[in-house]
Image 1: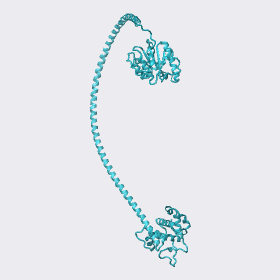
Image 2: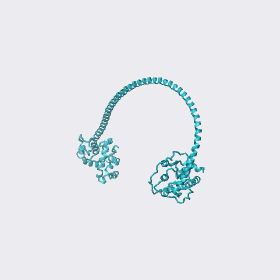
Image 3: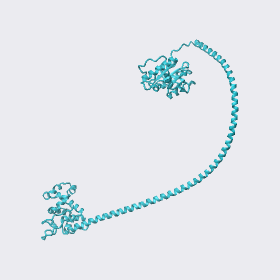
Length: 466
């Protein structure tokens, strides 16, 4: 904002200032308008006034500036600038008081400005600000000179900025040229490499063409050999057909001879059957005599009963050797054939069967249904039946097991699979033991010990048929 001075009959363009030469002349001069101050000069005037404002007596501070005088130094010039500028323009007495203190603080520079002999090396903005406040002779010229200096400085700054930008553009151009040179070198290297690869590809193409010609020559030779071999094969086929006809004739003769041999074998089998019956009758009588000689009474407990009594006491019992009775079959029809063997023992993996057949029921209902079905099989076949369930201890509240069915629960630290393998190992070699489980590990384990493993579906179908 430009600092202006109002026109009145009591003020002049150059008012008397304390300690300023030329003040108090009698001849009045016409009032001139306030000059337009450069922005740096205006800001410096406000800053100088704000700095001395708190040092003035309270009655010498205009009323509008008394509140501004209480501001902090950094806020006084910023927030009070409009009020300070207005008072400097409108109140010459206030300006004189401020000028006296500013000149005192300025020292030699202030005295030089008042005398109109400001040093050439002094800051033009500072000189113009002091000249505006002190208003010696020629103060307008000092302000105008300051404005020109400020403008010249601004122009110099613009020129310097333009020079700096030009230097930066020149540096960037030099950098771009350097980068372009590097890229050109890379492109030359890449071109050399591509030319080298092209030469290699041309050499490979020549080799491939040579190989193709050789392959075509070999193919023609192979075609000729194939035609030759086809002729030979045709001759061999004709010979083979002749040999086949001769073989069929011999086969017919052999079938006729076999018919005669079957008739002879039938007569011989009748003789052999009679001999076998006589041998079995002799063995049976010998077994009766041996049982009478050894005084062997019928046993009350079977091998599985001993396992049921102490299955958790010896988890590391020795395994029995494999037997030839193991068979690789999961045919459900095999169950009836195996149960028809004399003194067969059926061992069932309980939960493996129930969860596969009727898993929608509760565990209690699953156990009850399976045990009831096994009781029917035991009653029909007269075989020994053992069903094994997983469980830390025997479950209370179970109904009595049907006649011929043994119900076992694995103890803590032993699974039903391990108990099943112990039952199989406890049986004597030669006795048929059938294990029903769809667990592959169980099936493989009992097969190694000579048992017949069958899938759970075979038993479920047998139970559904009962």
